[in-house]
Length: 297
Ligand code: G1P
Image 1 (spheres, rainbow, N blue to C red):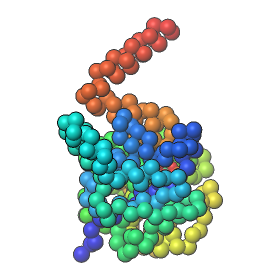
Image 2 (tube, rainbow, N blue to C red; image 1 turned 45 degrees about the horizontal axis):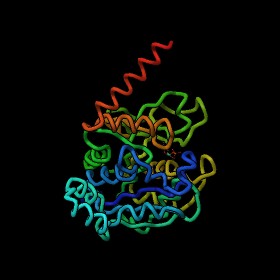
Image 3 (cartoon, rainbow, N blue to C red; image 1 turned 45 degrees about the vertical axis):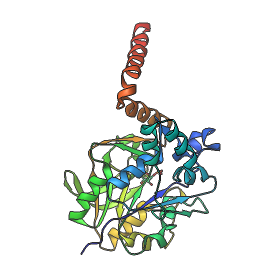
Image 4 (spheres, rainbow, N blue to C red; image 1 turned 135 degrees about the vertical axis):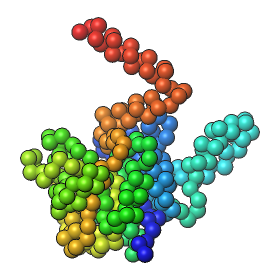
């Protein structure tokens, strides 16, 4: 029987330099879209996909991230006393049970592949998911859940995939397509950050993965790739080379690149417009902004 998918790795060791000075004292993953930290969206998505063990690969200066998942008894007491039940429920929904969350440290910034490898002992010999919290995906059915359902049918390795414009391909892992079945594609290769014009297709890897333990074995070799870093893409492709399947999964949903300021702002607006209590006010503001700009043209 195929093993169940119950573990997910969240690589959160990055310095977040693109968001300095904010990230001088606040981990990037704690920055908020409306009123929820980036990492909460990732946790919720993993839970919806049936994940039971949440493994964070952290680094120095990520203390606020660990605190975020703790119970906050004093705060809870205050809210209870003031009868703020709705807020209390929201707050409690962010608590993680003891034992369902684990932290391991990436002591050197050697790349995404290395970060995932740092969690190898916590994974053991079963399939696992990787979620990059910078990639926020708005979807009716959460992206990893869509993938987990497809994975139950296919097994193998699976990466979330999305078409990107030609001039953006060198920012991504890019898939070399063997057969295209619409939602699912089988692959015959993967290239991390190809040189401009050298991408094998326009289908990019987005930060959701379901992987076999073979990928961890390939990472053991610690071979460096694009940018002198140990790349997850290369290890997945090596697993394919040794006979495993690697599928790309075109998910339903909209992906925001919250590793960039423009992407973060777009996600903020999109998620705020989804909220009944904010929609009208924000929409009026955007409408006025656009009309004033148009009138000035
Ligand atoms: C990482 C992966 C890359 C993937 C991208 C998606 O790159 O290495 O394959 O396409 O995430 O966001 P990064 O954005 O960390 O450079």
